[in-house]
Image (cartoon, rainbow, N blue to C red; front, side):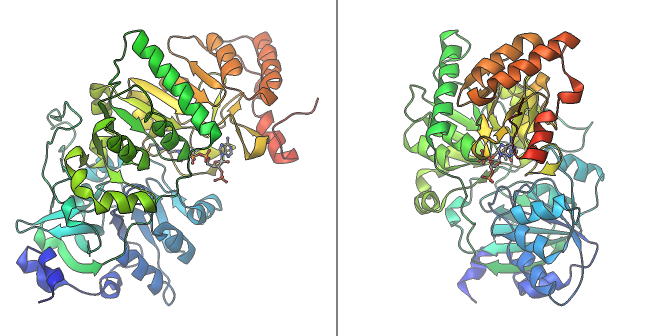
Length: 500
Ligand code: COA
């Protein structure tokens, strides 16, 4: 028997190996799939690719639920093939984004911690097929995931059928890194017994009812590397502002040099900000995040981070080679968990996280838009930012003060879509500086945001807006008919700069 079969240690499953095309042929029009995959890591690849091939000769649509965004162009290919009816809970692909924004595809933009609850409670379409990338299937019937856990465990538990993609390219050393915990039904559950970032509270794999395993396919396709851009001058300046804020917290006695467990969102800015910690005085740090990007491994290498917990590992090509090639150096310092545990509101509050996420825009009172360009066009989705923002000890949002060469101000009079209300946002940071909004009334926030965060080219314009707003009065003064005038001007004249 071929050596790769040693990855199927539950002997009774060895006869269920089929080709991806055959397994995909069982998926019918109108079905709902639960695919493994979280921020381009550990995604099911072979079955989605087979579905895309099938779409060349047959018309069908399926609902696609995942952990978060998929890599390996899976979202792109499925969107272009027109086979996705509804997508949930997050995506980050330009082709899929176009389909969503043109109305050709439905997208449910959902807090990443909550999808598992919807599935458990039967709120959304039941999962017909869970398709899960795995390292191996153990003798006692557990699926060992690869580079992400995401929603895989809840998909497997509740799906009618399970297809397992064993990926031979993933390092077997990954076994033992995962910690799968099932909280149980709402109203009947006990407190989640996690009080430290490094606590192990579950099993090393996803228990599966072997009867439900319809097929096993082998693949060798690696995860696609992350697309993070390197730090630039502005993101480095932003990191500097954030470090100064953290230093002030230490000086006030609210934090120590160990800080508090860190969560950092997706994207280049958040990655750069974490990078800024490497040359800082902070030490013995811990990470309790959704995704471990390059910066976290650099911080581990620098001896700055002692433990990191997340739901996935998403790295650049270079970093992937280094980390996966030397995984024994990292395996005792990381844990991968289901996303309802990494993003669990109660745990975020209990651990007292410092949470750093990126905004598309925020307004003069601190309302943050993370998702909708000019209030209408979906970018990626809220992801876990809402799970963290509401519950973190420090909820920090970063963004460059201008976008697209200055035609867009990322600080606006009124956020055109509010993902995180002023009540959930503690600190906003741009390359201009930071504004600590804690304990401030709306009228106290505005001057701070204007002077510390708005780009100089938009400051006068913002001051005029606010002066006029003050004449109207209110707890959060606005000139309603002008609140979106910057966005309207962008749409009509190609810039948010208003001509007098
Ligand atoms: N209006 C329109 N476009 C804007 C904008 C604004 N106010 N601010 C930024 N952009 C554009 C940028 O120009 C850039 O465009 P490009 O891709 O054509 O170059 C793009 O948005 C990304 O911006 P960038 O500054 O490179 O930031 P990023 O890569 O860090 O991504 C978000 C920023 C907000 C899109 C991203 O962090 C996100 O999707 N967040 C929501 C999910 C989340 O926070 N998850 C966190 C928990 S893990």
